[in-house]
Image (cartoon, rainbow, N blue to C red; front, side):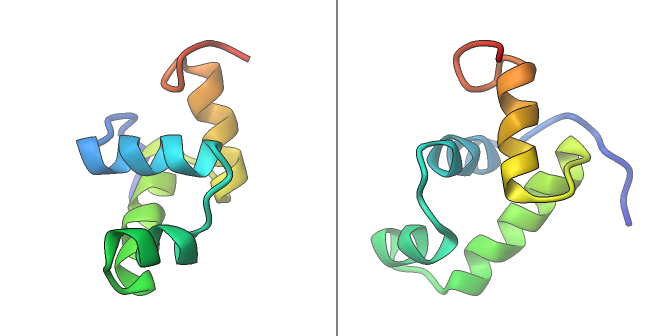
Length: 72
């Protein structure tokens, strides 16, 4: 497994915001007209970049780091 870099791509940051808003991988895939696997792979890289164990954990980290418009 890769070490957390803390840096997110624009797409990863977009997905982080969407996950924070409650969207699921499946919902995002349908809206973006891509395969859920593509969203899942980007979400996995997002988790690795933040050192998160899950998507909810990634959202929590995003809030604490101010990536989602404020600290929690």
